[in-house]
Image (cartoon, rainbow, N blue to C red; front, side, top):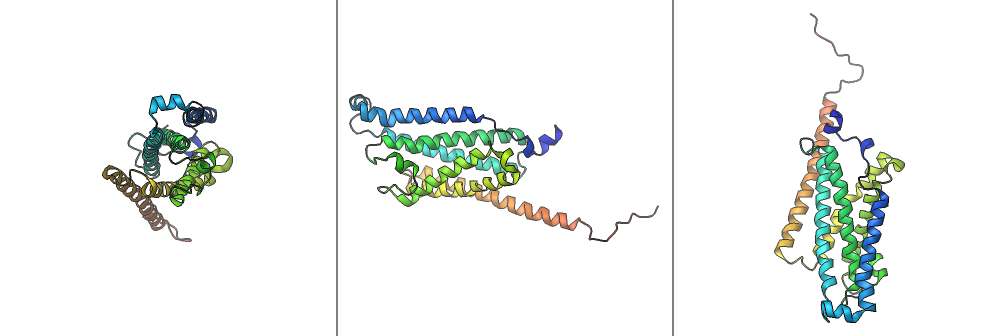
Length: 250
């Protein structure tokens, strides 16, 4: 128990949400989005206009809001992951609890990405199809390069979250390699938000981008420096081959 508090053992890392519960939740989210974005506007336009008006912008607003929330959750997840590898979570709240939060925030953020992307099928201005939502760089009417970068990040996020459920099958080494995709995911999401986000010109959004980017880069460099410093210390304290350590005579 003491060892678990001081250092997280990968063999003790388990998914905190079963894959069945997660799959059911995401199916429910997609079903709700389909009803709101496709069924109501196309099959019941009169009811939709009576609720939202003739110029329906609610889907665009939902996409904008869920995109910001998803980015913030991605940032929090990155911070927790880096703080765990930097052993900053040892004093509080502990590696085990930090890992639980790390997984939960990652899954929750992915749920908001689903909303952010698929709700756009209901927007009457941009008119995204399902293919344009799921296939990168097919957003021909709105910044295809930067939107495509966000779509690639979406699939990377699915891969990182999914790796928790196959870690025992793929092994710890492959699991770690897959987790390195988180850095590309975060960088791509940051660029996606800056270049294609509607609120990127707002001061509050720029503060979020600057602070989240700077804090993540700081923790990455801290990790690299601590790893290099630890390696040098290990080499310095390792006796050369063939040299016997002598104890002073009493």
